[in-house]
Image 1 (tube, rainbow, N blue to C red):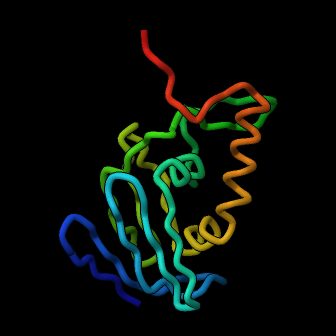
Image 2 (tube, rainbow, N blue to C red):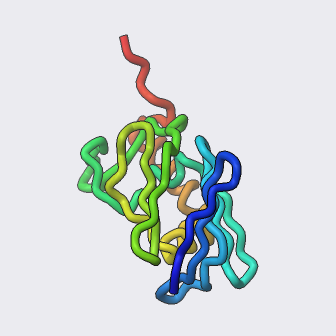
Length: 141
């Protein structure tokens, strides 16, 4: 397995194979500032928005609110992906403009996020509503 970053215009593309149970990743494209596109060998193509990726980051974040033991990230509607860097041949680390950069998104995790996007996002929005939180950032006074 190998990976190569290829610079094409303003976006970076990375191709490699996926590990685990998901299909093989054949294309990763960063479309700054607002989304990532991943394509798998089984024909699945997912466009994953920055907010979605930030909210479902695989890392623990200090900028979250714990509600009844449930961690909820809120106020990230307009978060921007500033860069991406490969991690081995199994994933990528994304840097967001809120300076979050500790999560490593594996190819398997991208597949999970892509194939469950509607359900996960609906659940996230329901949780925000339930706790009176918003996707919009707080207005600073």
